[in-house]
Amino acid sequence: MKNLQIWVATGNPKKERELLRILPPGTQVSTLLSAPGAEAWSVVEDASDFVGNARKKALSAARFLQNRGILNPADLVLADDSGLCVDALEGRPGVHSARYAGAQASDEERIKKLLRELGGIPPENRGARFVCALVAICEGKIAFETQENCEGRIAEHPSGSEGFGYDPVFLPLLGDSISSLSFAEISPEAKDQVSHRGKALRSFANFYRNIRS
Image (cartoon, rainbow, N blue to C red; front, side, top):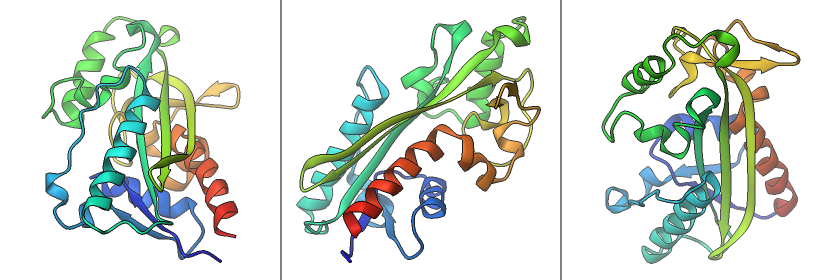
């Protein structure tokens, strides 16, 4: 069995925990934060779509690790770009989800801006989807790539304390009906089963098991 290290190009420890919940037990996962000199790494997310930004982040992080002699030949560098696309806002905030209310805005500030823009729009017209593009780099090349969606609706008020980002106002579609609970009101394990990132990570987990065997 091959011993593969997975480097996650993120500064968000919640994404690392999300990955560890889905990958086989014992998988070696580190975020870029644990690499020496990680504070010097940055990438401009200026692609026009989620896949383009995920590719940029993964390739940039791989070069960063390789230049510092940290990256082994068999290691994988994983990056995602995720966001919320709202029908009534013509797909906004989309690829700008993290910067929707300004580069330094908090999750609460982004949610407040979203709800202001949706003010007066009835529930049936508040359709939205979370999107996650996931890219893995190995030996300087794209080894894995996928994009997954989670359909749902934007609530009129935030609720719940789990998750992050826009989770408190996103009501996922479960089967044929919209959930009464937001992503921030359900357990991480329940969210993994239906979320955009959960779907993408399960696809990556299948890829990982195949190359590790």
